[in-house]
Image (tube, rainbow, N blue to C red; front, side, top):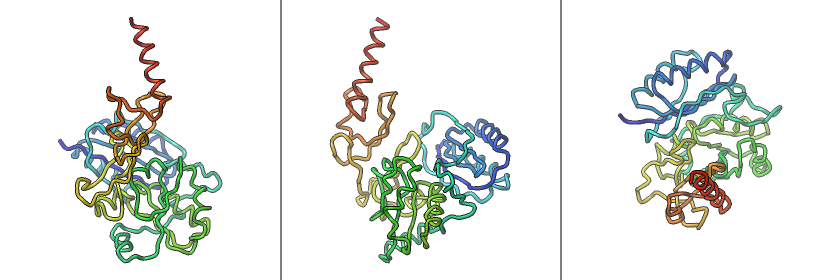
Length: 303
């Protein structure tokens, strides 16, 4: 049976987060879904993988809850092992921003939605507008929009640092983009609260645009927060452009990997030529030495 990955979020007031957490956990277990669900007073944010029929059953059950009836679901092909387990947790925010007093409620203020077709038309018309990529720097390494302003965040908590770089664009059309849209709900509202007058957010996120317009103005692949690491559409076609580079040798590559040192697990791009003969990958010589030192210690302990 085909495996699918479901990505969605909803900013909606949840009064009893504990009850919603228990309900979601039981529902996913009954349908054999794995992935991550974050629940907060401000809403829900989730990525799940399972059989196509069970994903469909899940969304139907979710829509029985009044506050979850207008969710836009993004569904892509899975590989059956995108997540090792199910995690359902209660947090203070559904996407961690740590803005404190500057926090933005998307239920109060957020950017206007711009749909993939409209954004595609803006590109074709050569309209003056500025895409601000609100993802983390490591996500942007493997793919990004044409002429976009890259955030250079190491974490979404760095959101306030974008102001200094784009303050001169307060009267221009700004389009915020992120993977599925959840970060842009807050990021676009944050820009509005800081004096930006014409702020849009890409509806459904980059994944929504890529599905409808593969290889058109978005170069490379999309980093995703599961064990697939990256995804793309029509990537074998001639118009697919590889923008990622191996962090070790600089060769063009889209092969995102997980550092084999269990104390690190950093995600980085590594071409196939830079993978160790035993199949291990390391982001640094320090991690490599640390891993093999521990391997030798374990061998000595069992000998």
